Length: 332
Image 1: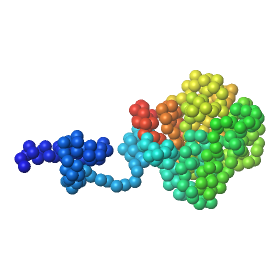
Image 2 (image 1 turned 30 degrees about the vertical axis):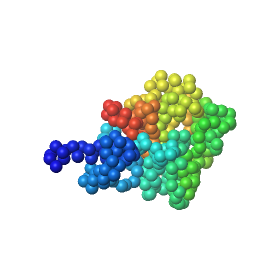
Image 3 (image 1 turned 135 degrees about the vertical axis):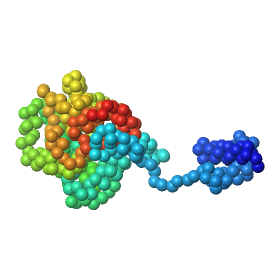
Image 4 (image 1 turned 90 degrees about the vertical axis):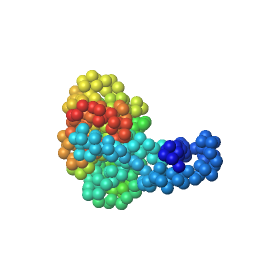
């Protein structure tokens, strides 16, 4: 066989292998396309495997984008960045890969922790859903934000008058505590109040004060990051009226974290006439050794960057698309 014939054969070998292994064609269809017999296609595929044209690598599903994680860490100065692929967790399901990756990372960080503070939100529900069952009676999970049972708001708070806040979502901290068989410390108060005195009245509760104090001593904090799109980013539910959000956005707020509204440079936008929120303070949050934020989506890019600039986040878990946009922003 001359060199030209060898080259033609090698090209045929690659075409047949690509049609079968990449494009998923049947051997009969490949035979028809290449004017070959079915046995000839089978022999070519065997040769492709033997000569290394086709190489198999067996391993676990790829959940993370390691190269982008390192680039994002360098760009942001964060302690760690975890970037989940945008592929679904299962071929025939729509479970969140971000939630799965975040749950695995959180479980690893909790090995030596005794107090986990959680800013319960809808955006963290996929993390709670993906947590593996465990037994951690030595771990205490505490609310970092006011969270009444059933998502209710107390009198004086939006969305109103003791009614269930439809769409507000479950108490993520409690769900995580149940999954880990850990102790749960609630912060039984409304998150949002119409006035400062109404919030101060809630702080008269000894249980509220004790939970806030415990939250300040958290070893690890798990938080979401909110946009200015109806507060939770979905447009479905907002404990803060749209007019209040518009006013805060007009004063430069790019997003919020644990109820603290942040400008792009990370500075706080103080709410003069409300909303009055009950939860961990910004400086108190910064004192927690590990502050893990889980957030993804185009509308979360600017809020995430603001949270990083403000020192509210030490570690970020996001997805491929969001990370790709974050690395394009100017370095903080």
